[in-house]
Length: 185
Image (cartoon, rainbow, N blue to C red; front, side, top):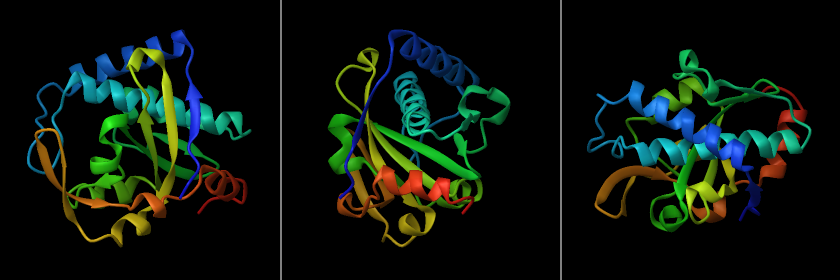
């Protein structure tokens, strides 16, 4: 099991992430959630942007230079973060959803995520979003995710067929930092 890294964002970093989330939500307001995806809500955009900022900060604190595609609306379909040639997708959940619904990619999303990313970095918010406390839980390769048998995961009112990586199979962030330092995948 990976050792989570706590990232505490400054108030200005939280506000910047929330502003990015608001803009992203407005751009995607007509996109619906559905049986294959979670609801398209302002809260889901906030959780996602907070996680992207935390992932980027965690890597820079390890001396890794990053490109923050998540800040550029024209790069919305690209990997969220690029570091040392590695393309990273960041998936973030509220802390209460981690056990039952975290570490997931739907079968419908898997080809799209695989095309734009080499791995997924898993995060959770800790407490209130505006507190800016994020756990970077670890990461998984796209093959790690694809090898899991799809199963129904349920959080709140949402039951969705997902590839869900077992918590014990999540890789430690230190392994990703080492892999990035060794070069592109």
